[in-house]
Image 1 (spheres, helix red, strand yellow):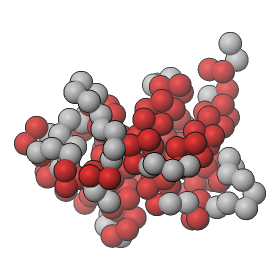
Image 2 (cartoon, helix red, strand yellow):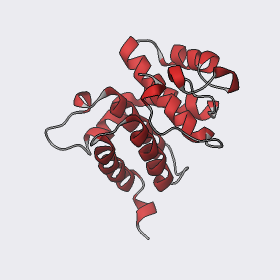
Image 3 (tube, helix red, strand yellow):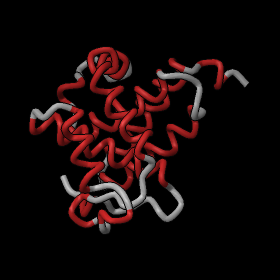
Length: 164
């Protein structure tokens, strides 16, 4: 997967979005290559993130909050089984997490990690961020699918935020 596949990229001043894009890319790379999360984090920090990383071509994310990026990747790697159970609980009966597109799986795992790891950022911010990213990675029905799963997960994991 390369960032050239991204149609909508985080604009200037959106390092948290850049972090989430990089996390999805890193999780995809880790899953596809079998490399440990720490090795992929190191590669991204050295070669793909930061002002010296270049542009979005070739999978680079020039503007990213490195602690957020690393935290999401580490958290997903540590909690993958639990996160898959959360995601699986919000899929249609005939769908499994393993059946999902690998980029969509990485996106949903990242969002599930953020939603299950506390109350910040607010659930609606998490949904909006990952929806922006979903629209950047996918041009078909995947963003709509992701929106349904993200909304259901958020309402389940952060029910108090939706009781107003």
